[in-house]
Structures are given as structure tokens and as C-alpha cells.
Image (cartoon, rainbow, N blue to C red; front, side, top):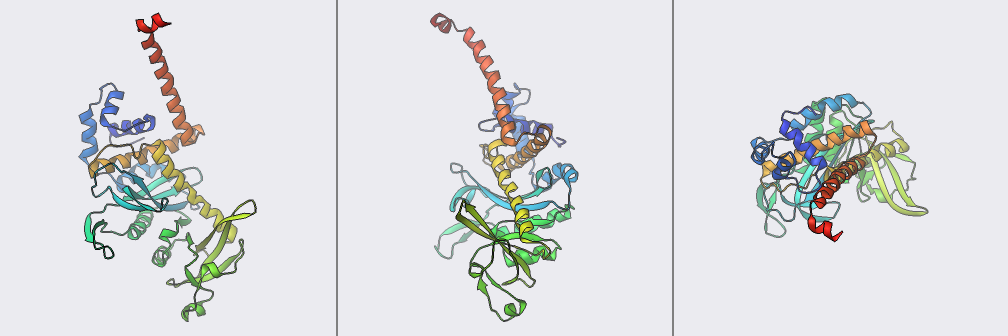
Length: 361
């Protein structure tokens, strides 16, 4: 991978082959001291790397997979760091997956998905650096000076500044606000996002003007039907469809999807939104295969730089997936298996030197 620092490129490989904590000492030992612990540590502390540097690295890859039918998926994830001291990066964040407040790192990512690759093209780490008094509890709490919704809009804007072409913006219901819908449409872009059943809408523009709204969940709409609606707070019509998830004959869940693409049909809306699952795969591989949470670094800069490098390690895995036809987990298993084979040979060599073991045999 063409990157500014050979040390960092080596660090990426270390993240991919390593199974435990990712430390400067561990990498130095792996290369038999050819690179000192201090040199690695200095590299992680010297500069702050972020979204702009990520784009410098992934731009050539993104240009190769550029496709007007690509999608830009935005989603956040919380990585627990329960035993680390708090700093602006490591705070308490609400995790929508666990439906609980978790101490750790919160990252919002824009993932570009073409026909063959998924690449993180922009991201923001949510730093809570402002201490305020909670209005409900009266207790002090740390908050971010910039809302997550504003960060969401910034990532979309930056992706367009970077000349990325995509057909839809995809996100979950957390970002399905009227303000975000209006913003994306104002950029000349289309979106597909889910709405909760209690969101209110009108069935005609006249009903909207007169304030005649009803909850989405009260609508009598078939699964494969699309319906023009006017959402409260949005000045243009949207297309609504309902998707039902079943387990044999039992309904497991219902999701309401809306888009400002009035030429779409129910099937294409649901098919396109299913591509959002790639961001879940991204989060999972980042944790399991790219050492995302396995750094003991404590400072905001060193921890943030480690997270940045983990995303580049994910990009390496994507490139390897294309060339080998093996998924990220299969690649990681292959690397681990070969490492264990070498360890087994080394163990056999050590055992042959043990007079105690040889006598026992």
C-alpha cells in the first residue's frame, strides 16, 4: 500500500497477523528489534491522522471502483473501553446495538460500496470535550461541541467534495430526521432510510398543509406497495414502502423505508437498502480482523492514530479479498493457521533440546 510512512505500512501488517494486544513492543519483537519500540511509539505520537489522510490513501482504490450505482452508507459504532481512563475520545456513549450507555470510543463512518469493494472514505471520532450540567439529573456530563447529526451531514458533504459518485445515501433511523432529508435533497442527492412507526406523515400535500398527519404504523400498506407521502417537516414528497421480515409464516419485524427517488419501486428500494449491511460487515471485520480495539494507547492522538491505521488494515484486507476470493475472516484464519504451524515447528525444536522431556519419552 502506498503510504507516507514505511513504519505505518508495517504496522498495518502487524495488525493483520497479530492476535492479541497491538503494542509497539510487540511489533519491535516481531521484527527482531530491527525497528525500535521508541521509533514506533514516536510515529504514533508525532502527527494527528484523520479523515483527510484516510482519503489520501483510499482515493486510488475508490477511483478504481467508482460507479454511479454505488452507495454511501453512514453509520456509527461504539467500541467498549471499560478499563481505560477517560479522555475526550474515551467517554460514555449510547450504543444503539446494546441499547445501553457504554464507556469507549464512538466513530461515525462513511462507507463507499461499489460492485466489488467497500471502502471507508471519511470518518469522524466523536470527542466529548465540553463539560455541561444535565438538565434532567442536574449532574455534570461530557458532551461533544458538534452534534452527531451535523457530523453526519459533514461526511456526506466531504464525500461530494472528494468527487465520489453514488446513487443513494443509506443510514439507519437514527439519522432519519427531516433536517437530514432536506439537507441531502438540497445537495441534489437521493437517500433511502427507515422511519419508525410513530413518525407522522400525510397522504397528500393538501393534508400536509392542513396539518392532517397520521402515524406510519397506522397505514394500511402492502409489503410490495409504494406510496407517495408527505413527512412532517419535509417540503417535498417521499416514496414509502414496507418491508416485512418473516421466519416461515411468522412475522419477525417490519421496516418502513422512504426515499426521495420517486422513480423507484418497492423492490428496488428494498434491494438498495439491503446494501447497508456492508457497513455492519465493516464494523465486525474492523474489530475482529484489524485490531481496532486492541491498543493499550491512552492519549487521544495515539489512540486515534491506531484507529486510523486499523481502517487502513481493513482496506488491505479488502484488496486481498479481491485477489484471493477469500473473505476477511478466512484470510485471518489462514494467517493464524500458518503462524501456528511455524510455532509448532519451533516448539518441536525446543522439545528436542530438553533432556527431561527426552528421558520421559
